[in-house]
Image (cartoon, rainbow, N blue to C red):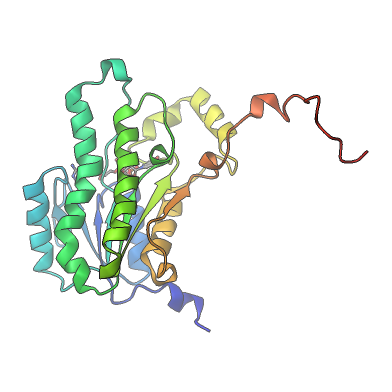
Length: 262
Ligand SMILES: NC(=O)c1ccc[n+]([C@@H]2O[C@H](COP(=O)([O-])OP(=O)(O)OC[C@H]3O[C@@H](n4cnc5c(N)ncnc54)[C@H](O)[C@@H]3O)[C@@H](O)[C@H]2O)c1
């Protein structure tokens, strides 16, 4: 039997985290490095030895970033797509430019990155892609038409590529986080009404962290998930597992209800 630490080890693996400077990107990078992987970050502001600048919405920029990566590493075992932006804007006032921008970063971005990484992923002979989707990729969310559409699209891309890249032994999975405190969501946490509502809607409690998302990435990117592809793993404290009828309690009794004790 393997020791647990060996089953989780990513020693000798090369990884790229796209969106490395963000809340999730920072936690995912730390988790992959702690497991032994050698990680290169990519982000808009990327600079320095371990980060490469990229705008994922720009095909030329993505190509240049992965060309630079190919000069540094012989193969890519793990690609994590976590760069993203969010709009909160109802349909009536959503500008077409905003719609395009959100789709360009959240959906076209992962497509361009996976496509540009393909030769390096193939060279690994057993690689893993993990896309950071959202609960908004699994269910509708108020006043976020572009974000919700982009994340549903990313879930579709994940499932398609699980099929298409299977013969190359490239696994493609997604994580669907619930709302978690990062620079993207910081604004929510000043709103006491929102916090009370959120707490009532999450069975495990509204206290998920970026580390919880990173741990799911570790599983999907690592050897324990060797026969797992095309899945979307919610890390949402149970939010999408249930319809919350808390205000109704157990709900009204119906005439036909049976009392099992009688
Ligand atoms: N925080 C949450 O509650 C939550 C929930 C579900 C899904 N997500 C998703 O997780 C991912 C990471 O979110 P986060 O909370 O860490 O947000 P964040 O704002 O902290 O990080 C996002 C990162 O993406 C980078 N980025 C944005 N546009 C880019 C571009 N065009 N090219 C390259 N990099 C770009 C930013 O520079 C930033 O470092 C996003 O895709 C987001 O939609 C977040």
